[in-house]
Length: 172
Ligand code: S3P
Image 1: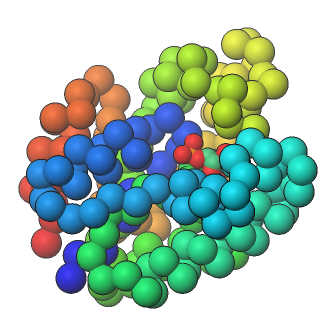
Image 2 (image 1 turned 90 degrees about the vertical axis):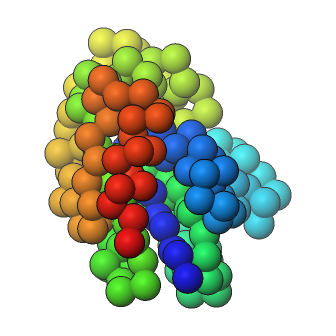
C-alpha cells in the first residue's frame, strides 16, 4: 500500500511531478482537480463562476476524503487550497499516508503563474504587479497547513528529475 499525496501552492508542479513519479514507481496518478471536474462535469473555473468558492471547497473536501479512504495505492496531487479547509490537513498526517509539500518561494511561484493563471479563478484577474503580493500573503496564510505534510521538498532552481530523485529517496 502506498498513498502518496502531493501538496503545494498553485504552480508548484504537483501534477507534473506526480505524473513523472507515477511512471517511475508504477503507481497510478490522480489529480484532485480532475476528479472534481469529472464528478461535477464542469471545469474548476466554471464551478467557481457558477456555484462559488464555498461550494467548490465543500465538494473538494468530500472527494478528497472519499478518495484517500477508498483507494489503496496512488499518487494524488491536491489543489493548492485542499489542505487549508475542513481540517483536511489532518489527513496529511495519517499513518498510511506519505505526504510531500513541494515548497516554492514567492519568486519561483509568481514567475510560473504569470503564464498560467487564466484557468485559476483565484488569480486569473490579477495584474502582474498584484500577483507577487497576492502570493506572498496567501502563502503566508497557507504555510501552516502545507507544513503539516510529513516531508518538505524545496523546488526552487531544481528540475523535475532532481525533485523526483529527492522525493524517491524519502519514500518509505
Ligand atoms: C486552488 C488551486 C487550484 C484549484 C483551484 C483553487 C487554490 O489547483 O484547486 O483553482 O485554492 O490554490 P492547482 O493548485 O492545481 O492550481
